[in-house]
Length: 302
Length: 307
Image (cartoon, rainbow over all chains, first blue to last red; front, side):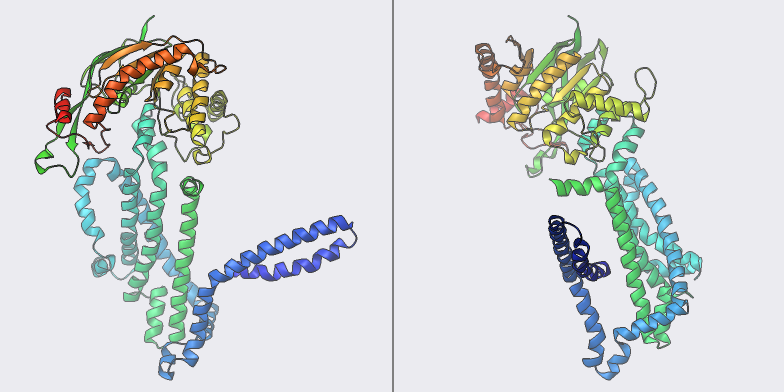
C-alpha cells in the first residue's frame, strides 16, 4: 500500500524533468522521450490506481476508526474505543520507551522456537509416517484425536506440567504448529502423481533416490501450505497463552493494559499483533511461492 | 536373428474389487485375466508395434517388460535372462510424458544418469549436462535445456521424455502410446523423428498404440492382441518401401493393403471388447465394467454380452 502511494509523487515529477533535459537534444529524440515518459506515466498511474482500489477498504476502515468514536459513539463508549490517532500516539510512546520492542522480542522468541521445533518434528515424522504404511495405520487414529483437541484446551495441562515459564508457552506453540505441518507432509507425500513414481521406477531409481528426487520435491508445495497454516496457528495460540499467564509478550501487554485501564495501549498491542501476523504470513507466502514456482506456473501457464 | 525379448506363455491376473454402486452381493474380489498364455519374441534391433482393443492388456504387457510388475505365470526374458525388476537396459516412454515438473528439460533428461553408470563411475554435473544437451539435440530440442516442462508444448514434452529414456543408453525402448495425446501433425512429425532415431541408434523398440496407421507405419512387424484376456492373435510382417518421410507412404498400395489386413484382424476383437464394455482397470483396483459373474473367463463375458 505504502509503496504504490509513494510512486505517485515520483511519477508526477517525471514530466517536468523530461522537457528540460530534452531542450538541447534533437526534436526527434525529445518526442521519443516524451512518449516514453507518457507510457511510463500511464503505467504508473494504472499501478497506483489499482493500488488505490486495494487500499480503499483499509483506508475506509482506518477513517471509520478515526472518526467513528468521535462523532458516532457515545462518550462512554469513546473511552473504550479511542480514535486511531490516540492509539498511534500510545504506540509511539510505547515504542520510544522500548516497551513494545521488549514484548515483541519475547513473543517472537517463543513463537520462533516453538514453530521451529514443530517444523522439524512435523516434517520428519510426517515423512516417516507417509513412507511406512504400518506406522500410519497405528498412529492415524491417535493423531486424529490429538488434532481435533483444540490446543488451547490443553493449555492448563501444559501450565501444570511445565509451569508458567517459557517452556509451557513454547510447548503449546509447538503443539499447535505441529499438526498442520505433520498432516500436510503426509498428504503431500501421499498425493504424489503415481505416474511419476512409475516413471522413476522405470528409470531404475532406488527407493532412497525415488524418495529424495521424486517424492520429496513433489510434496514440497503441500508441505509449505502446512507450514503457512502453522505460522498462523502458532501466533494465535501464543497470544492466547500469554494472556493467561505471562510476564512479558504481546498477549501480556494487551491484557495488562486492559486491566490497568490504559485502553490506547491495549489497542497499540492489538495493532502490533495484527502487523506481526501480516508480516509472518507475507514471509511464509513468499517462501512458499519460491519453493513451488514450478507448480504455480503450471496453473498460470496452461 | 537372436531374440532380444522373449515372452514365454505369460499370464497375468489381477484381483479386482467391483466398482462402487454395483450390487451388494458383488463385494467379493474377483480375478481378472489381463494376459493369457502369451508368447512373443522380439528380435534384436527390431521395431515391433503392438495393437489391440481397449483392455487387451497392452499396458500390462509393457509393465511386465519394464519390470514394473511380474507375471502370474510364464517367463519374461530379456537377453535370455528373466526380468526381475526395472533395469538400465530398458526404458519406458509414457503417454502422459511423466516429466518431473520441478526439473528443467536438461535435468529431466539427466535424471537417469545420476546414479552409477554401467562402468561403475558416476558422471559429474557437467558431464551429465553435456550428455543431456546431446540427447536433447538428437530429439530436436537443442537450446531448450533450461525450460521447465510447463513451458513446453505436448510434442516437446514427449521429445524430452524420449531423450530422457535414451540418455542412459538402454538397449530396449518400451513406448506406451507415446503419441496418443498429440495432435495429428505433431504426431506424424514425431513418428518420422522416432524412425530416424531408431535407425541412428539401433535400439529395439516395442511400441504400443491403438492407431492402426501408426502401427503399420512404424513397425517392422505388427503384433495384434485379442480382446480380454489378451492373447497374441497374429503377427503381421510389414513390407513397405522405406519410410524416409519424403513420400506419402500412407497412400502406397502396400501400406493400404497391410493396413487393411491389420484392420480386419483388429476389427472383430474391437467389437468383442466393445460389446463386453472393457475398460481399463482403475488405479484403485476396481474394474467398472466387470460384473463378478462374468469376470475371469472370456467365454462368460461373451455370454453376458449376448444376453
